[in-house]
Length: 400
Ligand code: CAA
Image (cartoon, rainbow, N blue to C red; front, top):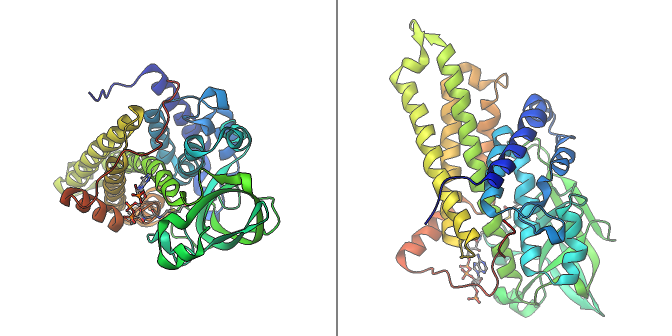
């Protein structure tokens, strides 16, 4: 049975994340968002508060927290700014949890322990200039060269591209299967930023998440040691989809933080701003927008919590995660658009944060599975065209 009461550990973790939001993000984020620059104090503050080791067992240097705690932290961080939640989505959801689940012991010692301790940052490279939703459309190749693999290709829209030390990269290891678009020709590799042939850069001019680092990774004849292949050759598509199950979960929970930020800002403003000789909070059409934010927050929260509960039980959560991500992002977009409306002309300027919330809300309906991909997935589950089989590996039980 799903229990919505938080445990002491979950409350403690939520409060740690809330502290980072209140003390580090909220006071100065506007400045960095305007400058299109990552907040310089964010990663050190997250590392100091042990927020970079979520769900990773203590024996690998992590916090050992459960999956609901990860969601709670995402919600708290995105209450401050989406760029802060993105760090957890990428570092934990798309990198650390997949490495914990699919990598071998040697790889975990080398590529997970420093990540969980917050000494190194991890990221994920699936998307390419011409392949996002169509994951088997990627062009990056890995060809055998002695004991190594030689990687060539370009990854695009990569969060933390300029900041990460290790990347989980997906490439075709079977070129015949690439031509046939057979996903069993794809493999996953851990690639280090410092290796020859790896270069990264920032994508300028983003609509939102301006304080987040988003860029590209170019790989030219990068020699990747054979021991850096993750799991088995030809299993990369499954690893990639598994990564997305965790990343999408963090996006869903984070979006609830964004809805809450929109609601709280709107409530505060609506009570003090007057029109027609009364606070706008007393106008029914403003109430309607605030009520929608309230409802959107509540039901989106239940959806990510259900996905988190499944993860805590060791049960596959692909369907629940996709639903939670789709709905929470949709509600966040609506809440942010309405928050701007509640603020009227002031919402149209960056004097108030709702303008940033509005711009930030758009990306989540595109990254980690567009709203169209999630809509189709949910239709296919309902129609019986898509069924989640038991996976050969799934998230391990956490320490708490
Ligand atoms: N975990 C593990 N294995 C999985 C899985 C999962 N969640 N989902 C599927 N698989 C396995 C299946 O069991 C199947 O295995 P077998 O062949 O052995 O049966 C195999 O993978 C193929 O599965 P499907 O038939 O379900 O795959 P599909 O072709 O129907 O998938 C799709 C289609 C749903 C559209 C999928 O391609 C998809 O999700 N696309 C969206 C990709 C995406 O989200 N891209 C953006 C990511 S990154 C990003 O946004 C940037 C960033 O930096 C944040």
